[in-house]
Length: 207
Image (cartoon, rainbow, N blue to C red; front, side, top):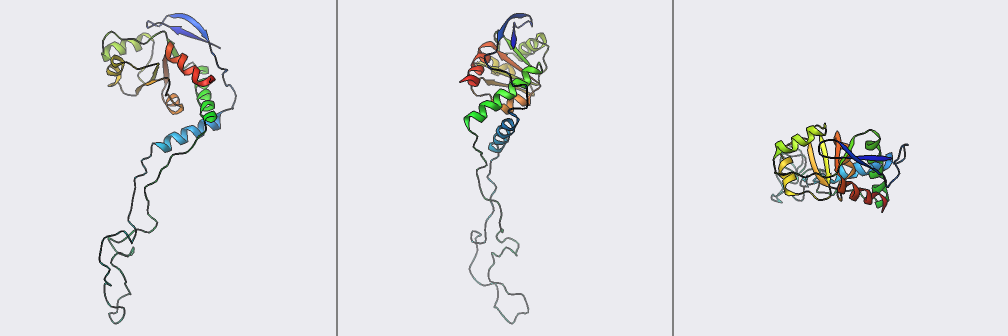
């Protein structure tokens, strides 16, 4: 399959052959599921914490004597049955990360980009370069390419002008090709690659 390279005016300049085979069948769906699940799990802070009976501050004195009061027996002010007492089987800080091996990650990445390419949702331009760090200038670029702001912009190395021009645009994310992940590729309506960014991304799929 060939991908058209456009200029910033939206005109096709050349076409390049993909260096990796597109996945057009159901292969890789499980890998995508595992990688996205692992990514979302890693975003969880895992900081919820409750105190057990032994961790609640308080005296060790028995609330009242064992017999003769007419009340139920009580041995501790920190009892889980009491207000302010410990929590039984409550949450503790934990790590939610899941391990995914390298081959599974690569297969998931290849499946995700294959589906987006087949759907015509990937645009590659020769370069993404701004004269000024202005949001207005970048929005004009999107208009030339007939793109909305629900966009993933993938470049080889984000520069300061691009970051400043895009940081106030909702639903738009700028990432470098070396770290873009499956979740990001699936999240946005369209994906805009710079040519150097696309070439760097391809290397991750064939190495």
